[in-house]
Length: 519
Ligand code: SGN
Ligand code: CA
Image (cartoon, rainbow, N blue to C red; front, side, top):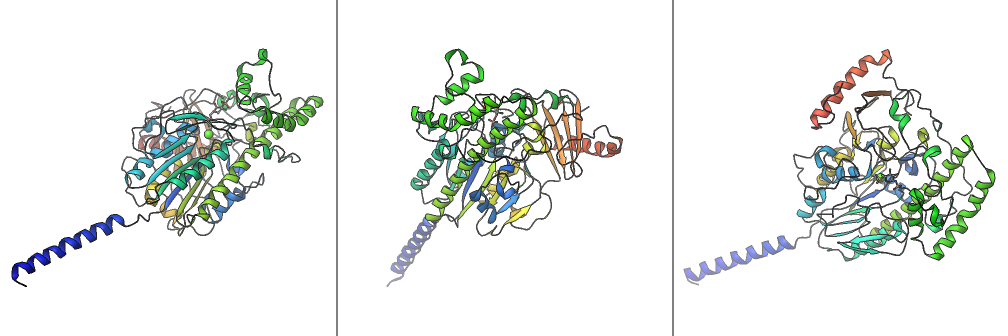
């Protein structure tokens, strides 16, 4: 072979090798783990048996905790639906992502964890409740309830097309999810947001659970008859008491089809919802609820007895809805197992905030008090969190975006405001992820909860109702159910000063402009 022929041959081999490397590179499967983010709506940690409250059994969610980290002190930054979802997606507080209350519209053009994962090669989907008003961005597939969604025969908007679907919301969300998982681009890892409407108000259970808990009397929280005597005016003004603010038809289902002249206010909302049921479904519903309604009318209860009857009724319907959520977590996990996805899929289970199950006499959320400020959080990460671990470390939903990016091996944008808690999941960090948490609630409308900011440390909580210039301070070590406001107690004056300073610091650190001044 002459010199030139040899050069040509060497050149050709080099080019072929380059091609071989390139094609091996482009065809190398993306082995990053899949991520399923499960968020139920208003799911109180008290209603997950792994949390140990003894109210109900959630075996499928508990199984996640058996192989994961269960957070006893996971919190939100703003305890209400849309805002909480926006915080999770952006890794930024409400005043930065712009979605401060449920009347906001999410600016979908901003950076989100879904977009960052998508841009890095993940295939992405969101299915179920969305509640951010603008269309989802950063998802290859979306199929969401409009607004709050309905339990029975609900509407869905699938990639922009709205239609009514027959069935029960909690099951349908799973049906759509499994269908998407089957049809997804399997050459990529996936990021799926599986978001249940349940167990949001008005707690309409699935027919198979109409009689679950029929013979059960749930324990009454010790502070069910709270008179708010040590609290500021805020606690006295709220409209979320089980005894006084639940609606007979809408919440307590004490009537079925209503005559036209009665279809006003909440009765009209109830009738609209009830009309989504088919005549056969209505018949089953009435057969199930009529005997206990008849007994209720016959008993003619009043005062405390009536309040307790409402509490039991509320708990039953709420927990029946939770049961379907748990069943469907089970269905989804079975699908993963059957398709070899259980070993390479991270599962996060959480809610958009906590919920009162009778504590302080309440339903709903909004407050910086523990039951609504805290949210369930369980993370199962195959190969990393292999055995059940329970942590008391304080984390917040503003940490989720960064944690998810970190788990996917992606860089964390400098403008996100949380902290990745991957070191904690890996067992490399003990103690709190945050020494102090910042909170800001804005929506002083339905349920009349005054706007407030606050700080929580390991032991204390300071709350400032800034439009009223009123303060509350709790020593959580001595008063875990927040019954004694010690703001004016001289013994706490030093603590009060330290917490006020911490509140100022956090407000500045997170650039929160409201309130302009702390008195
Ligand atoms: C609805 C409910 C409220 C609930 C909000 C916020 N009323 O407005 O009870 O606090 O949603 O919930 S209802 O009459 O429509 O049921 S959230 O989960 O969307 O934040
Ligand atoms: Ca919610």
